[in-house]
Length: 363
Image (cartoon, rainbow, N blue to C red; front, side):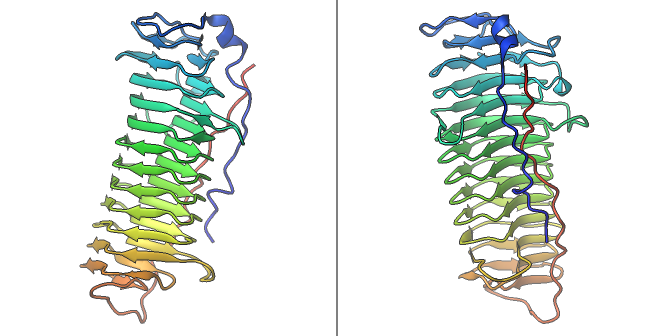
């Protein structure tokens, strides 16, 4: 049985961004500021537009910017927030409990957590917008996982046109609902775009390249992943224990698995293209057949080892699979189904755990 990726999530949510950030500087409440010089360690209580980089390269203690009020906009205005590196365990943008935040138009680099957005159980953050931002790292960290965007307990967040390069975990939403991640890109990550324990989130028109997991959908209900593209990822899309989620019109090619969904309940796969993968175009896995269901319709899987393969009979129609080296379709309704008898299943690798961040306390 594969390791449960959801059950092993580590959650230590501590009080963050304490005295160091407050002592370093606070922008007083008031109307939007047209242009501001903001120091490393500032607490933001009014809207700001940067006129220079925020340089935290020599500060291994303070978070760069801590949000201290609701309804503020941080416009990087083409500038950068520069961190001291992931070993310092500092955060680029920290919002621990304030709704209505917009962060836009710049680059954040050199942190453990590049942006952290935290509500609380029963008190979601609303009105969060991140747009036109780049998060750049130096490759997977040997010291601790790094995170481009980590959001927990968000309701209706909009994350648009984000770019994540060479960071362990790209964009991650946990325990969130009705949020959207669109038009974003990740490359060189362990996990590009990741949703866990959430409901009715939408991930669309995103691209991931060269990651272990392009997209991951873990223990979610009613999520939609559509019109996304993954190339050269070990898993284009990996889903586990998700219910009533829809994976539609995605393209995942030249990896190991185009789409793998384990233990699905009411999941729909429709109009996906999964070609040229080393293992399977679509692989639906369970180690027992009771209580699991999936609809597989109008998908295309060509030139993989296995085309469309399920370990229990699925519903659906008009799938196309050809030129797959071992079998085109198994327990999936295809226009031209291959033989079933004597065909071994794809190798089911136990995927490594996708962790949630361990959030260190900062005194």
